[in-house]
Image (cartoon, rainbow, N blue to C red; front, side, top):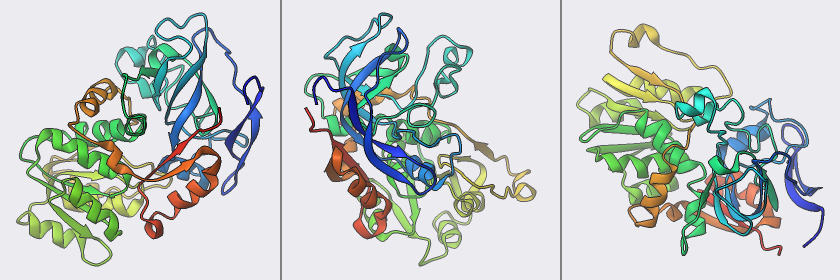
Length: 354
């Protein structure tokens, strides 16, 4: 309600517990803050990890979510790039732009930010959100831009590109495998094609997601429940394995699979969020010139991806399978959590409360 000091939000109450409930509307705390009215937001696989209790830093009472687009409601006195009424894309990563890590473009490690939305401070699955360091953590939305497509730029597209494709050093002619055909794996598939790999092998347990992957540009798909993925990859690569094996799930078994299918001199870029220890087969890898990388998305590629989406070179809207009103968020979570049954990729929730 206009003028109200409360809002509705999705609140975490410990492992397996969440509620759509009233919370105080956010206010400016620091001069560099902005308060943004959410227009559209989504749910991330990381939010599911939070709800399982895999991210212990998230405490009872936290509003979760770190993706979205909106309209600026209010700015602090120190904000110079934005004003009330501006249409903005919210980055999942908050960056002060001044600390040692920000100066190295490692915004995810910002000493005064990083991944804090929906993690250490209240997030975007709400009617309003406070964005610290607004000048460096928001992006202006061009006139006529597709809001739904741009929500995919808050997190999954830069994550797939930076943590998977760029960390994996994908280059023209490479053979790559992406283990996990969920939204992040598909984002990696879309952005890998910037570098014209010769083959892209998608591995998953879900035939529907593998079918979607084919339409997104995968050259081969493997259902790892129905056939041996190691044997299949080796048969497709003349026994050599893949140049890049991306882990896009966050489970021990999928990380182990990447170790088994990577070629000599290859890269294993980890994208998935891991809540448990994994086995490292160093006795088999130490002499094979393998590079294993980890990374939290830095969102340094977001401006480039904005241009790429605007030009129509990629269409992230294809990742959206279900749409809800924001106050239907519990139903949206059920749909996202039961992706196999409901053929879900990304869900979009629209705030219609004016």
